[in-house]
Amino acid sequence: MVDVLPRVVPKRARSALRHFLASEAAGGILLMGAAALALIVANSGLAHAYHDLLHAETGPVLTPKLGPMTVHLWINDGLMAVFFLLVGLEIKREFVDGNLASWDKRRLPVIAAAAGMILPALIYLAVVRDLPDLYNGWAIPAATDIAFAIGVLALLGKRAPTSLKLFLTTVAIADDLGAVAIIAIAYTASLKLAALAAAAAILAAMFAMGRMGVMRLWPYLIAAALLWYVVLLSGVHATVAGVLAAIAIPIKKTPGAPDAVDSPLHRLEHGLAPWVAFAIVPVFGFANAGVSLAGLGLGAVLAPLPLGIAAGLFLGKQLGIFGAVWLSVRMGLAGKLRGATWLQIYAVSILCGIGFTMSLFIGGLAFPGRPELAEEAKVGILLGSLLSALAGYVLLRFAPAARDHAAQEERIGREIDGDGDVEGTEDRRS
Image (cartoon, rainbow, N blue to C red):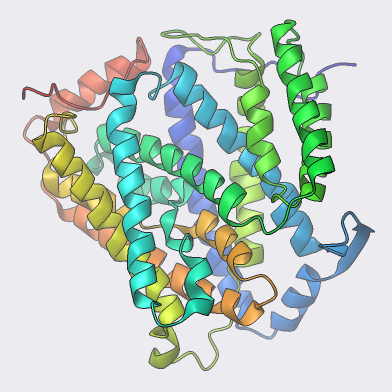
């Protein structure tokens, strides 16, 4: 049997990181279009057809908990598992062979991501403090949508310093890791030990294949599909299987060089990236962003659930991330981002409040069996993400560039195209 994915990797070192940013940017712009289309359809004469399509039963019954599979379930539990597989591959690559490969590089993004998850959750809980039924939505505003946010940065062209794009990418990747942990721990109601044992056995077999030097992809892909099914049966959300499988995919380190042709992780990541960016994520956005705005007045928008989510995304993210960066620089834990002003750093902190994809996903898990609350959550997610996108864009659009902007862009560009070791920050003594 041959590999499902071709052995195609970027030809030059300069294309690896730039290709990733370009793919995320293009996918983010497409996601914006898909979300807008979903809103239009959901508020038009096609609304009933839209909802009927999403809830059409396609079968089979994979688990009694879910019942017959529908189009919506296949998207959220099936296609999104592939999305999380790519997320896991990106996390592993960054921690093993990328911009998070050492504690010096991880420190600032991890601190910023942690603060950017904790403060939004606290703001949300403060808003809904008198409504215990809503407490389970605390994690909805904790996530950042990397594709959407980088898509907004792409619209700014050269006005957005490269160091900001790298910072946003690393913070979002660390943020994704936290979101996956939340999904696995906080939104698992009950567990089936036999299915968990089977998942552990499959995962162990995948690691064993790596230790034995198996470099072909197809054995790992078959194991990943089996892992998805048993995780689905276990009670843990099936998409977590994607991240677990990614951890077991072998990687060959290639610092300062193009991604290795014989590195399974690199090959799988490059093979999946366009499908996820240009198909899976836009399909998910279209299937989940369609919320009816009929009769939606100020009172509904300012209801505790949507208000808590919007406030968490728009206020919590920017205050948490910018505050963490400012304190880290002041305390000497990290250097200020090169070629970027404090105003630009604040603006990109606002953009981190775009929680769209992951927030919609967590929103669907937070209120099972309560579709009316899931719809309210969508209103808050859309409002908070839209405010963050607009405010961040406008601030970056008109923020003066740093005096050394051109020189730093050239320097960071050489590092990306050369040794690939990009910090994006100044020396701590500066």
